[in-house]
Length: 110
Length: 117
Image 1: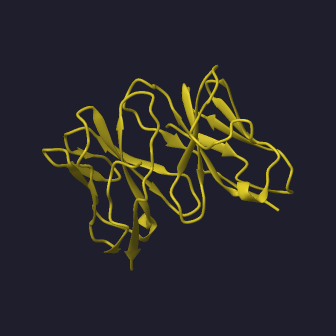
Image 2 (image 1 turned 180 degrees about the horizontal axis):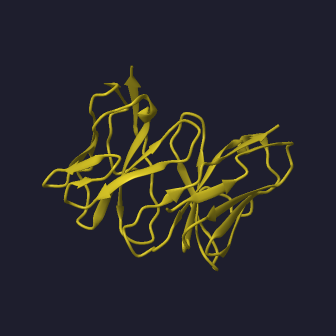
Image 3 (image 1 turned 90 degrees about the vertical axis):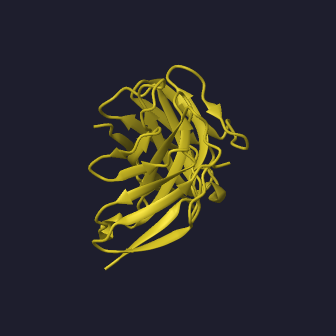
């Protein structure tokens, strides 16, 4: 079973920031938070991951609350090409696979 | 970097045919590869985990004799769907990770859409 909870869908206006929430209240101390997205009929694309500090890369920012029970993925300037299903996954470092939940379907609207 | 190539991207074949799907890590050595299956409007379901040179570990409910996995090298894993039937039609996606001991992400291929007539 997935260990995260995400809203099933969200809309975002093109050019605005998209803030995708994720609850992971049972996360353990050695589990990382990973974000992937899947554009229709493609394989999942890695976006970002973190343990407890906020992270930023060229695609997005990841904000993790101090108690680590939730996080937010921020796409600073959403474009139509960001329309996809976004998955938040917690995983311990090591030889364990990613287990996908249902994700959030983000629709970016012109 | 970290490119995973999957081939073929689409297969259409008759019932009873065996189909082989290849997954290659192009610019890194994949000590571990994973195979997922995705039905329409559903999330990815893990089928099996394979480590180079050893037998794959299958998830509960996945028939190991039907879905043969070979991970013979650090850059190649294959999934063979034996005697495929219409209910095996699905989107099959492979994933690879280099350093299994770290927190580095898994990288995914673009998937193979299998249609059994």
